[in-house]
Every structure is written in C-alpha cells, then in structure tokens.
Length: 225
Image (cartoon, rainbow, N blue to C red; front, side):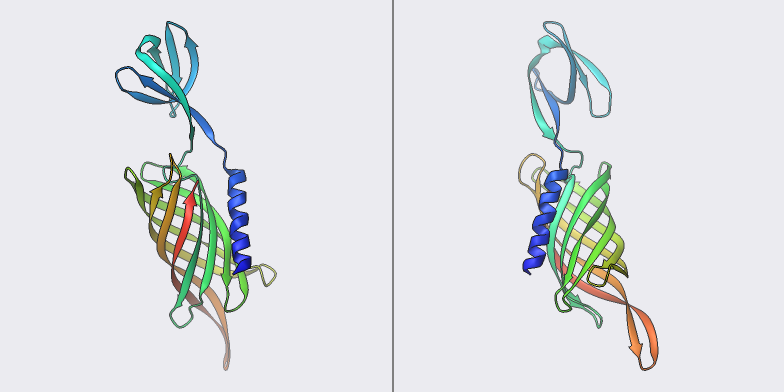
C-alpha cells in the first residue's frame, strides 16, 4: 500500500509540472456583459482589440469598458489533467482485486465530450504484481453551476512491470462519476466503475492457454487540474 501511495504522489507532482496555466483577459463592460480572450491592442480613449478563444478579433469602444482583469484558463471544461486513485474488488471466477492510480491528459475538447490519453499503475496486492496501463480516454459530461456529471470510458493495453514489461492484454474501464467544483476550473472527482482486464491463463491438464477476463468493480477519487 505504501508503494502505491508513493506512485500516486509521484503522478500528482508530474501533473503539476505538466500543468501550464494559460492566462486570458476578462473584459467587463458597463452594460454588464463580460467577454474572455486576449487583449492585443489598446488605444487610450479610443478602442480596444480583443482576440477571442476561437481566433476572432473584436473591436470595442474603450469608453464602454469598465475594467479589465486576468485569470488562469485551462482548455477542458472538466479539467485539462485528471489524476485519481481507486480500489477495485474482484468479481467473477477470474477476478483479481487491485489498487489503481492513473493520470489522463486531454487531447481534444468538444462541447459535451473530450478525448485524451492516459497511463498509471495498477497494483494487484494478492499477487504482489504491478501492471502498467496505457490507454485512450473518452469522456461525456453534463455541466452544472457547481458540479459536472460524466461518463468515462478507458480502453488500452497493459504491461507487467514485475515481469520485464511483458504484455498482459487489452482492458476496458467504464466509469460514471461527479466532479465537484473546488475553484474556478478545478474539480474534486468521485466515480464508480468496472474494469475488465483480459489475461492469458495456462492450464496444465490438459496443457493449453486460455484468454479470460479478470474483472473488478470499484471506485476512484481524484482531481481535475
């Protein structure tokens, strides 16, 4: 358990190093409107040019603007980098319990979904074995003022760190969860899900290899940065 906690701490530190804060301007108008973007030119007493996140350039009368401020902006609605840790309990004849840590980096965003890539470490404590998953993450989310509900689906391949990074097999991992807002665009995440890890099992009498699903149900706790 201590080893897996050290790995989780390492993943958080790694994510902090990766997390680059992009600052954007917030333009407040006297009529109450607010726009976000990058101020590219200001002529005192005349006008202001604002480049929107989509690249469009808008020009406004400076006399209609009350103030301008800045904020840290990330791309993803539900977090640009997602870090979590979870515990999964074995289910089925071939299930094996495990502790999971993972980090997901968003690659592309759409209005209600995102696509990303991830990795992490899985510790099968009954076998004292570490596995290394590499996967794609697909996420659908529904925004609210203070929280985001979402469905997440991971699919990828796993390698056995304990056994010279030998190939283990394909895995799938659907989850449903809720992200609670901590501050501007940072969230605390909690989810439940299932993981199906396909593994090869060797039989000796008779001698043959069979592909079986090592399934487990569990929960995750984490943060969107």
